[in-house]
Length: 361
Image (cartoon, rainbow, N blue to C red):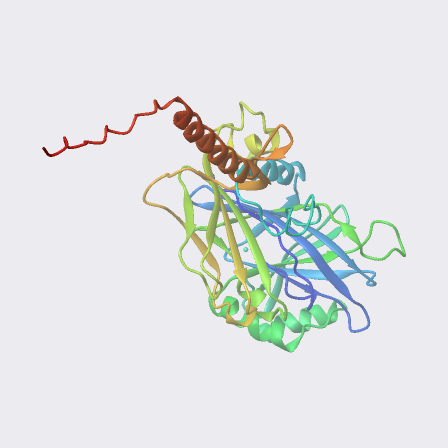
């Protein structure tokens, strides 16, 4: 079973948000402040547990996610994200340096450094294959044979599909993917859509682990992807898909039943898993050219990020580096004293007798 976690700031435009797209009506604004997704795959079935934190002035919005096959939708468990963050948190350690730095005396005085750090109908281009109410969500599962038909369905249901989004959806239509369209609305009548929403859990058939990222090319600001994968082995993306090379932040085997991590154990079936945390940055989202696919690495090499707090080495409250000049001065004084002492103890050798020749007769 594979599980990944995506956390990132996905703001402006509102309709570019990681594995999906957010759509609001013309007069409203919604920003996806954070998207957290957990993705699982057992070799034939993939599941995505996703939670959105949003803010704005919209009474409702639509979130669209492409999926390769017919999906089922239900509410997810938010505790899964808490456990995943705890597992992959970096280790904090303190290390010392000897010579003073810019923030240390005598350069800039003392400074503590705080602050750093399902199949379509033959005649219908859009087919609603399922619809249900899940908490604050009105979930519609759709199939579409062209982006224009999907755009028409959204408009009929009160949403306008941006032109760039319709173009970005075309590759999924050509691959005959389906869509999950979720209408997001506050549970209180008349309230605005804001805050952290309940997670949704999607399941669908898939012969590969794929995380849809193509729609993020619509974003106008840099995107950050934090991907956490739980599998039988250490995992890695097949490519950078237009971003900087992915970096591993954590890799190691975890037994969720022993910790315990109940939500994770429910996903993995109480089996030990290998956790891999991958970070990736997309400075130019328009260069994103595909979806993320994950594969096992050649070796299960463990790794953990260590965050160091550097402090000046001291002894008895005094910087140790001060002992160097003090020690040097003491050594010179001691040497001089030893030389003087040696001179005092040295015996005085009388001068040799002066030879006086005998007088001549």
